Length: 235
Image (tube, rainbow, N blue to C red; front, side, top):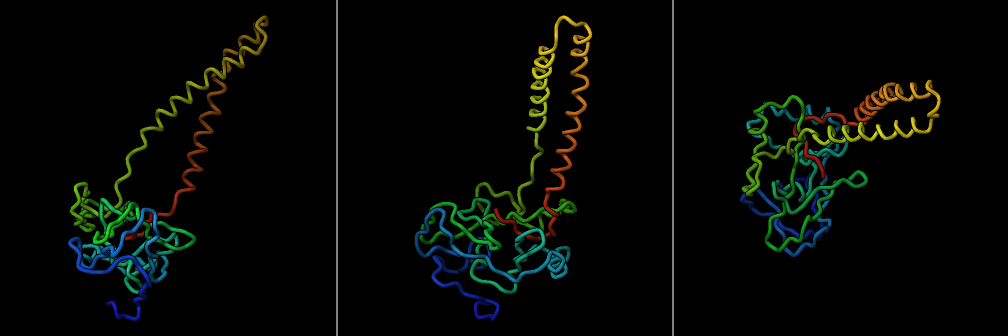
């Protein structure tokens, strides 16, 4: 393990590796780590998404156990082969660290001040994919034991964006004063102009609906590709 040719030790790290109550080996602070400090880089063999899928079969596992980390839509880091001490930092639903991507590298940062002897943890937030069923929670089980433990290392499920309906309602009401102001600018004496101003809201409602659909298409094209199963996500 620690003498493997694939292990690349990191000099002057502020933690040591020893048995963890969460799982296997864990990382424990040997000195005080200030909030915001960059602790270590997460390294691994660079694979494509397809290569990572071919290497690991989640369906054959009783419990998920890989070290895959999404770097971007096309690249995955596999610390199951090439790795350093960051591989042994465990997951927690109440983490004191976080993972961030910067210029093609993944680093682990302190979310808060960490005292000597504390175990370093971050939220793995494994990617959820559309084909995951109810059994996925059991495959990606969490044993961090914190009060807010969600029972899984999968990322929290995203809630439906209820705010969009309220914003849409506001935009409709906001369009009414605009139509009135345009009608006010037209001549009040001409009856033909008055009839046109009354029909103006109907003609203006059509372009508004088109603009909403166009915005929806733009949001769709900006979404990231669906990652394969069993990847950690930074953030």
